[in-house]
Length: 116
Image (tube, rainbow, N blue to C red; front, side, top):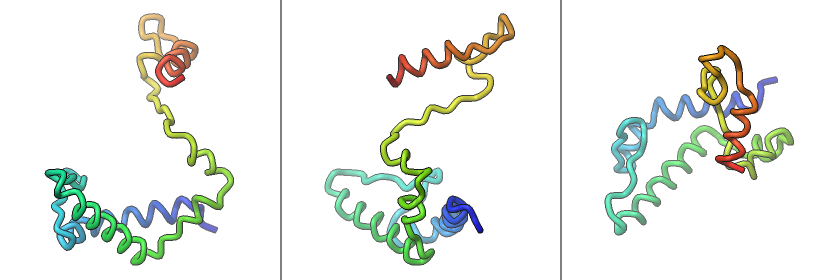
């Protein structure tokens, strides 16, 4: 059985292969792999309508079903956790290059200071 996230990854890869053409259909030019926002406040209503139509079209085309995220108990934390700090093994708060040692407490203290 495939892991639920595999369906999402495959869907996103397929969407990105087609997004250039789809954006043009909806009157949006793709720039640096991001859909640019509206130019002015008066452009917002047609812009959000195009974004919504494009998203719904993708959902329909790829038979997207969000229950894969809402029905998996292990993913429920994502509904209330709006920040997930990530780090690299060479993060300056995690490694002391002078003493050539890891500083886990310093890294965790920094996270608490920044995010509570």
